[in-house]
Image 1 (tube, rainbow, N blue to C red):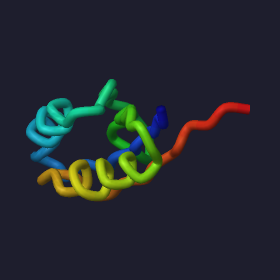
Image 2 (image 1 turned 45 degrees about the horizontal axis):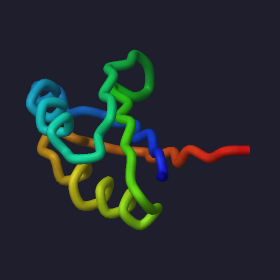
Image 3 (image 1 turned 90 degrees about the vertical axis):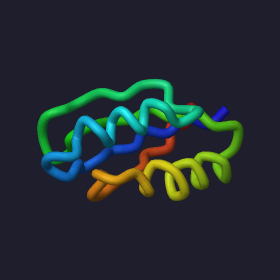
Length: 77
């Protein structure tokens, strides 16, 4: 399994709708609101890095109310 953390900047006024939609995406494990440069962090689980890429680019980034994203891929050492 591949875990990714997607940092989100949300469009003001559309936060609730965007986060509700993201929570429904298969593979989304956790959604947390945060303070700082980013507005939310989404933990996503996928079978492969390619599946994670498709999920972020094809589903999460397409949600209305998402202004910007940055994806961090978790690894073991």
